[in-house]
Length: 171
Image (tube, rainbow, N blue to C red; front, side, top):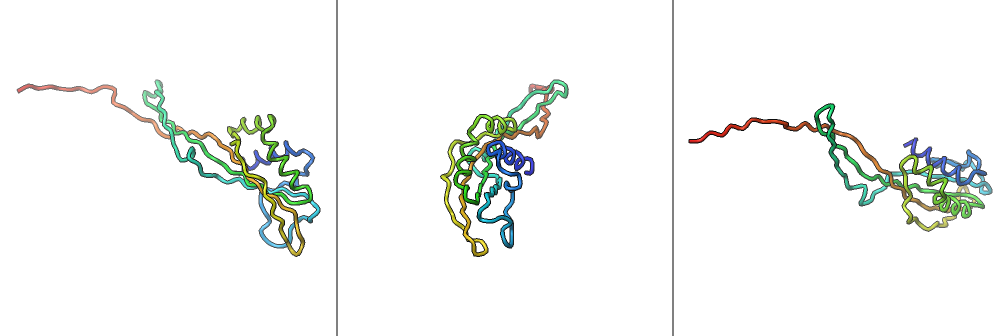
């Protein structure tokens, strides 16, 4: 999953190049006072495998391997990923819109396509959730974007009967 999170981190940096790398976080702070003030912009994101009708279907294809004289069976399916974003700070709304729309730019789509990811055009509306942390109010916006990725695996070689002898005897 680190590779996938790294891909989305790189896409966010591509979309918002002026953002400091320390302001983009893959994980929320679990306990205690936030490591940033309410006047700083901060982006948190989490990548989770989603559920969709496409991800439940597995397709099989068989290909004959002349060298091994066997059939190779390939399993293929689509995996859905949900990327959940939480943005804090005075520019959190503008940054959320920039990220949400930025994934539709050609540069971001090309980077995703190179890794086999494709954006699902429907996404949630950006939601506003002001949050009080340690007695201080923080501006907070959340949204989610869904991506599909193709997956395939050659999982088995199928041997088959190439010749057999049949004896027919009469009475």
